Length: 113
Length: 111
Image (cartoon, rainbow over all chains, first blue to last red; front, side, top):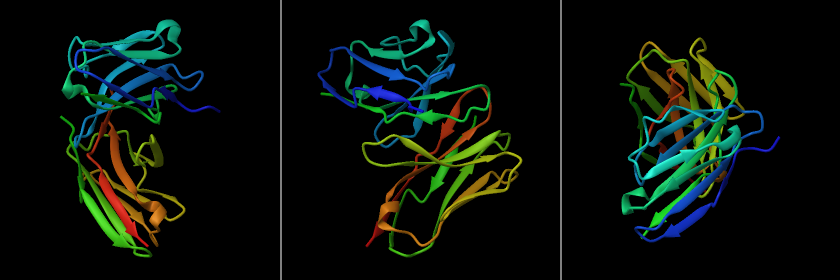
């Protein structure tokens, strides 16, 4: 079984540019989550999809962040325009059912200069 | 509001030593607690999952305990090896499809 796949693994952009991160969950997992770890801080919840619907986006920092999950398969997280404080590692996870046992991807490291 | 604290923040031990990592959480109403491992540039690897009804879980040289009433969990690593060097994260799930993480303990095992 393929795991959760994220790309790019690392992205370096300048302040004001746009970046799109992609996550492919485990096939058949309806629940997809985005988390973020900024330097020295805890991993924090961003949002949760069930299939293509956003169930909870209470962790999204501001309206520069847009997450989508078209067709309930892969998800994208777009940051536009990127700011310095957006630097960190963005993790995607997926789960099946309600047990909330998450399988995490390798993360996408974002560096904003 | 659930908060998860991990102590120590960093730990350096010689190879072969047994060690304990600590995790505490403020709200005992949890469904489960997980210990993860993160290697530099890698994702999160789930090590052990303890359901709220369980007291401990074991996998190889790892043993995790859970005392829900006191809001504590420990991860015991026996006979540590250099390959155990990584950041260890504790995370609790208390419903609402949100997992709450601690800041992690960075472990370095010296050969």
